Amino acid sequence: MKKSLFAFAAALLMLGACNPQVEENKNEAPEVDKGQAAIENIMTRTSIRQFKEQPVEQEKVDIMLKAAMAAPTAVNLQPWHFIVITDKKAIGLLSGNQPTNAPLLIAVCGNTDKTTMENGNKLPDFWVQDVSAATENLLLAAHALGLGAVWTGVYPVMERTAEVANVLNCPPNIIPLAVVRIGYPDEAPEPKNKFKEENISYNKFGGKKE
Image 1 (tube, rainbow, N blue to C red):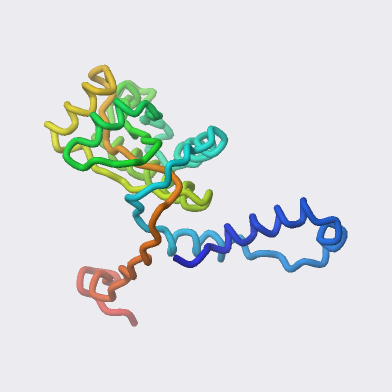
Image 2 (image 1 turned 90 degrees about the horizontal axis):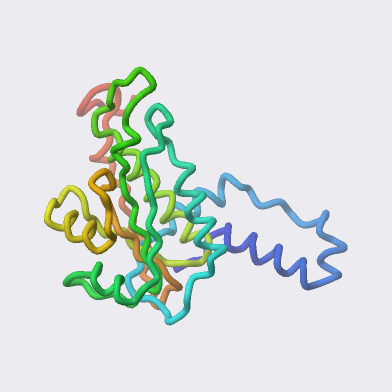
């Protein structure tokens, strides 16, 4: 997998910290286009299912959670809750019939107690969209940090939702939407090119580009 510009920029910063000559000339170094780096991070992210036996640092966990909670949310209700799992027994129970060697799982859940507006009206199930956006942010942050991750779906398969909620001791208002497996990659699959013109319309369904 090709390295993202984000990772390249981080490497340059670390080089500057270790090399006095680079530090002296840091003002002469070309700037990395932040927009291009962000797009590169999105386009090179792919699902990782095999991981090294290396724990994920708490500092990186914190960054991923902050990125997840930067997601858009209807009426800013932020109806999410994150359960960080490192216990091997719990990881085994949550893996079901798809065992994993991931050292870290994060269950991304919806909190239905946080779906009521100030006027007392409850929103429809927009929490699903909000929590999905948070999950994608989590995946992108993991990739930017040199980690690998894969989104495993839970909700709306009610049997699976109940199983995960039981393992994690979730109260009725906390609904697991997904369990993200995270760790240092032990594989390097090429990102898939999913861009297809037939999935695009303009102005109305089936409308052509002018």
